[in-house]
Amino acid sequence: MKIYDISMAISQDMQVYKNRDAMRPQLSVMRDYTDSNAYESQLSMHLHTGTHMDAPLHMVQGGDTIDKLDLSKVITWCKVVDMTEVSGGITRQDLEGKGIEKGDFVLLKTKNSFSDTFDDEFVFVEKSGAAFLKEAGIKGVGIDSLGIERSQPDHETHATLMGEDIPILEGLRLAAIEEGRYFLLAVPVRIADAEAAPVRALLLQNDPMDS
Ligand SMILES: [Zn+2]
Image (cartoon, rainbow, N blue to C red; front, side, top):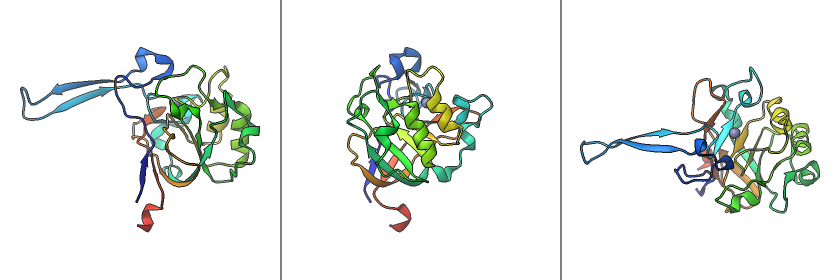
């Protein structure tokens, strides 16, 4: 079975949103073999750093938290859609004619996947693109930027998707992935009452139950 890891490695020097130091993960060794017979470390990180999933609470007051996520939405077939020709916001026109159907989990592969440094002009889902995905009745959406939107002060993209309980997966790495159908495993860490959580996102070529 071919397994594609589409998540970012967590490290101190990884790209973080707007290069903010507060978003940088801190991994510290609590004990090691120099003075102990075991190795233990501690990680401190922002929940929107690296590959992660947003829950409705992130943008909707009183919205559901990440631990309430229906896992059948994130262990599922998905479609990787090539958006590498798009600059700026992905619009309705960009998504039309791409074979996006009701019940799809859509992963948007953009130019973002080809850079390991944060770009202020990263490709995002513009509000008309979010409206298209909502109307199509998708099950979930993923993108290779650290945020699914920017430059939209009212966060219409988050609000549109979260209003439909559509999980949003951010910070994917899709450079090596060709457009097509894959089995997605994108289970967020079960953090009680949180608005987001880190994900180790994987794509499989086949249904794991078949092999
Ligand atoms: Zn986020």
